[in-house]
Length: 171
Image (cartoon, rainbow, N blue to C red; front, side, top):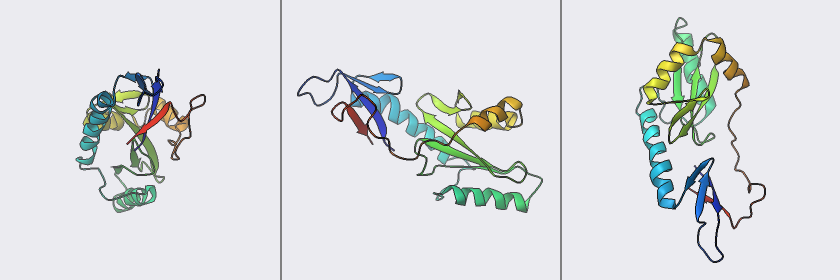
């Protein structure tokens, strides 16, 4: 996954700006980004990939969708759900479930502070699952679901007003 890093106050001839920004967070060094951003996100992803409902080896939404649809056919009285980490949605965990007949897809953003889902941070991962199970039928939940959009899946160009000299990327 690529993370957009905006460099601020870059002196002429300097290798890197004095301040680094990711979204609304500010960092002093690349090491600080690794420690405060990347390592916490990786820790959260390990929680997801070690969960029983995580689908290992599935890389497309269609495969994930087919899996839960088949589980629903095999046991119509249940509401099957699964999680996946798909290359088409970097930085997100994909939740799919089948309440009736239609497969529902939702995106959970992985951020250093926790899992960002339905306009709130939830951590640990089991707390997110419990919250989902308790709230998926609620009107407020359904309203957020209806206005939710798929995360951007294409690489972004330079941010408006920034040159390639003051915009960086880190893997």
